[in-house]
Image (tube, rainbow, N blue to C red):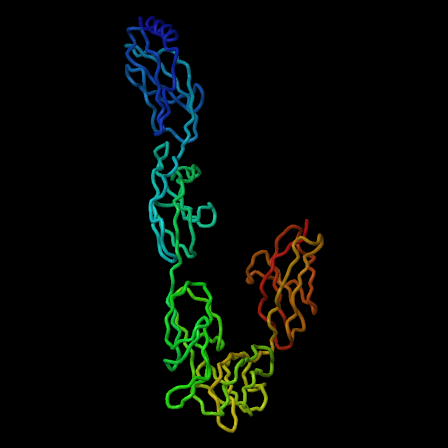
Length: 473
């Protein structure tokens, strides 16, 4: 009896379950199905079969005696194959209905235009919020912000819907965002519409003062009494100067000695990003006394037997005394000697030690104040590392040619090579007395890093800066 019923059911189902259709594929990754009902009165329900290969299904879903069903929890990028069977009171099934297939594709909706301030100042944090993006599979989303509006130069990390930016330059910025799935991170939305943000430059406070206070200063061509405070934009340029000599109370005269930033008596400054003070130091002097020498320069490791100190002559000076210290304070300066010229060789300097040098001008009326110092040192005799090291880039088929600029006092050079830019892995290739070395052992097409050391009878220099090169293939 059961076999007869099943056979009738099969025949009926083949006739009546003729249309299984995909009703919809909605934003929550649900596949909604519907099919024609079975007219056999013994049919009491339906089983829905689905799988990832045609006619190969998993365990069926008993949906009861209905003709619609929704499949949930389907995976991104997978094609599913679906069919339906009817079953009767004896739980015998019909043949499969026609098969339908669909692929689940995740999409991310475009975010809304950002919310946040439309104006602000440089070096100030500004917070913006994105929203409105959803995943068609219901996955969480995260956001990336484009602070410059060009999709390349100033992008935030992927993260929350609220993020902040601090702009360093004034201007108009078109801020936008896009979203992506946190599960399938390659699924990214389009950029949102842009929010226009106008950023203005924040000014810093700069003071120009004198020591002693109350003397004359000239700022951008305007002379006034110090101190004066200015509101300037970072990166802008201004000229500050101090007249010299200046008359003080009771016949005292003040002469220029130095600026706190070590600029010249009149010089141009570039405004920093934070508040600053520029102080002109002036000293008193008797009539006829020379001004301190200017342009003091001490050689930096140029000579193996001395530090050479030079300066610009002072008007009315007949001689000069040179001072030296190991710290930049005149209270620790010791006299080295006196000369009538503008060059002094300090042969007592220890090799490799940094010294600070000052000069005073003398005449029959007296001695000037200290000059501005300059630091210098005596060479240890070991040459400095070679400069402008260059390795050929696939220029030659049989070698990499390495060249450099000669180092003073060097008698030979050793060339080093590595496949990484770290000296700890550098291996010596060979030594030459010239400034050209051909590396014929380089493998064709391989990228190498080259360094050079200079040597003489005193020793060997440190590594030069590296340059990368290769042999052509």
